[in-house]
Length: 117
Image (cartoon, rainbow, N blue to C red):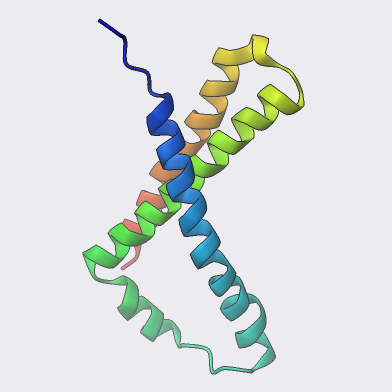
């Protein structure tokens, strides 16, 4: 019987995080980094943004986006270290730091999202 590996799942999460980050992050950077500060659009008030983040499905969607983006980073950084720096002999340490960092980021994101009043 063939053993199942987690590699296909890691590549699936990598691609999902990359696609979401490529679609959503440029819009957020444009709005909150360029358009609102320069006055091209009226910035939403704090109360309006808080009202948008209040529903649980919205918080869950933000959390899923953050987790997928973190897993995309972890997988990309892991293979950058493997192929770019040729440190394949530190396989276990690199996996622990990359995916452990993504897991820690997911926990911190969940805490921040659910501590919003």
